[in-house]
Image 1: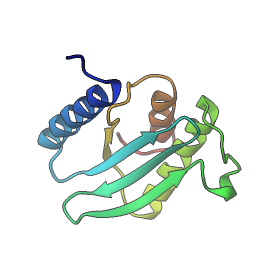
Image 2: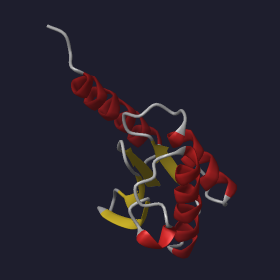
Image 3: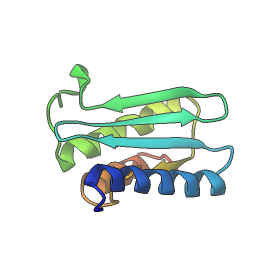
Image 4: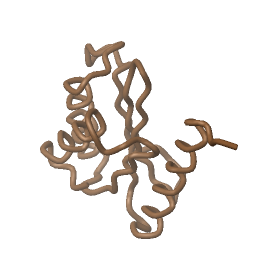
Length: 119
């Protein structure tokens, strides 16, 4: 029986997250979610189980509502780096989930690195 795209995505997401969790114990996780219309990112402290900062193209003050392109992803990356600094986070590990590190996900990570967040 063939695996569906969703099943393969979920398996890939768990595989990536478990490998990263084993290597980066105690660090904050920068988790990315990409949909067809938006992209969002969260800084998550897995030890406490809390979200420290978040950014998304759904925020009206960013002016990117409904945009899901590389420029929007780069803007979200810059914003999350600024909010991470405000929350006192200087380094995190990048959890791409089941998404490939290419295109929008890569643009978001590169923009966050350029804005000063150590990933």
